[in-house]
Image 1 (tube, rainbow, N blue to C red):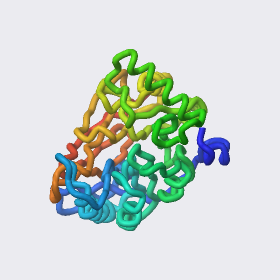
Image 2 (cartoon, rainbow, N blue to C red):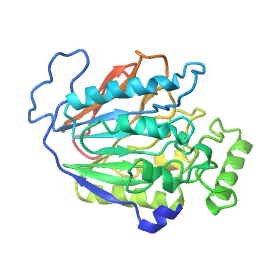
Image 3 (tube, helix red, strand yellow):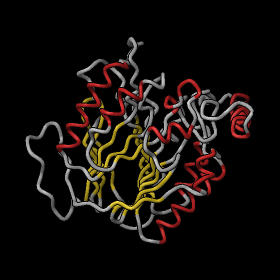
Length: 315
């Protein structure tokens, strides 16, 4: 557990109340008028990975300033209630924050950031990353209308977000060694896991939302479904936690830039396409409209549209 989390004791819970808004898709000239079935909307961004350096392979780091500015303009025009950025705002070099944060901050309304593995350049501490991204804690939750939005920190137990020799670092070494011995595809140094305290908090937060009749969407940086090299080290444990509560509608993440979508045991697993991929004007982001029976992801650029059914009753 990191120092900041210890300072707060448990992750913070925020409440957001705002007027309904409806997403505007790039292929439409006008936003549809708000109605009773379109409760609210939010912006969604994954993996800008800005860095003022040359492109490498398919990653055009410097182009993310233009891409994010474009996304900010669209999201603002859509009059969303809030925006979620699921991590890897930068690729490397702490100075990258100085360039990309002012662009992110052009997005109007509440902005909820998550930490990605690239947000810890040159040993940048978790506490400093949280401060730069104006986060209340490494992990936290937000209540909006009858929904609970849960922001995880998949970097809690990792080799890059903890000091060598610390208990969390040592635990990360042990987990990684075990996965390597098993021949696991996700036995990679760029992945991580939730700590014991965060996992307990996740289950308690989902249970609290369940008791209050709230549906839940959980956000993480790393995927937990799909069985590839980018999966969180503790993907099965996170899935087990999600499936143990009947109110979980979806888990949404970044990290795996190719994107993916699966439904497993009634839960939608959405991996967003990474904004950093391909040269501008290629882009990838989304505006999400939440309705009583459906969560509609309107994708822009490389991000495909998705319609996630919301169960009318508990699973």
